[in-house]
Image 1: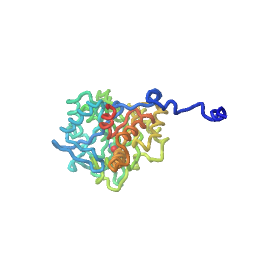
Image 2: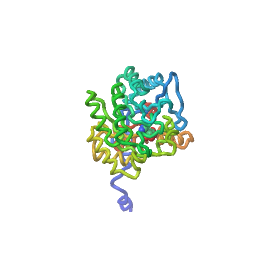
Image 3: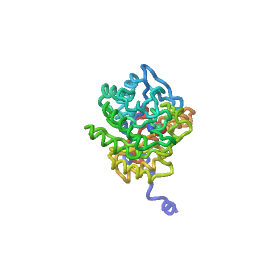
Image 4: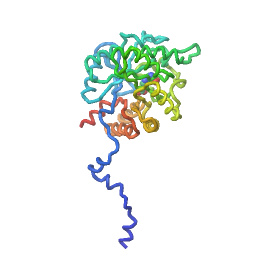
Length: 335
Ligand code: PBG
């Protein structure tokens, strides 16, 4: 009788390996460390200025002096790089976004100051015109309000070059114009900036999860009810993402990115599997806001959910994650 019962039990017991910490550690397939993280930061004009972002609790826009302090903490936590996003004063916004390539502009000054005080910390700059246009679109409009591709690329070139000349380690075009990676690579080569890396926002979707970011950089009001569907990707597609990534690689991208993050991890997985190149993902402002709202309500446990969410990016195949939780996660991983 007892023999009969025991035969009904499984020979394979997956719980055996889960029983103790040592065997759980031995069979763990993915890992998360501060090396995997990139912190996006918002910089604004002035001194000793910090402004809260209402839809992103815990995130602040910082003036350049405070940004340097922030960068010191980031470096001390072992985070390899930060990604700079400027808040541009209304008087510097225009139809043609000329401020984007001002050698003395906010981003260009920030890059110089960061590389001077913390040469080891990687500095990534956003190449896109939306902080600089009066309408909040990532490009230059024609009479019908359509974002003109090649005209915009001409301006992106100047912007990327001005970032690289200021000392940016990585330029990251987030605009989704066709052909911009190749054009930027050619100008960098021509100007002997051979080692400036390009992190291409290759599979960037027309996502409503960017709402809080647009509040943070102050482009939400300019954009109004308009969207970016004529250049950013349709959330329904993933073959198209592979096509975009393949093109950006052929044009000279060093790293590619999928954005947003958590709802798009299947795309991260496909790209890593099919193209096997350095693949990044962006846990965007809306994902951050959703988490923070649940933490504030006491509905989710912050520390463990932050680490779980980031581990899932690694499991999906991401080599690194841009996340507003980077500092907090690095602190947790340090404990
Ligand atoms: C601008 C840009 C956006 C983000 C990064 N770069 C917004 C947009 O495309 O409208 C979003 C980042 C986030 O939501 O955290 N080109």
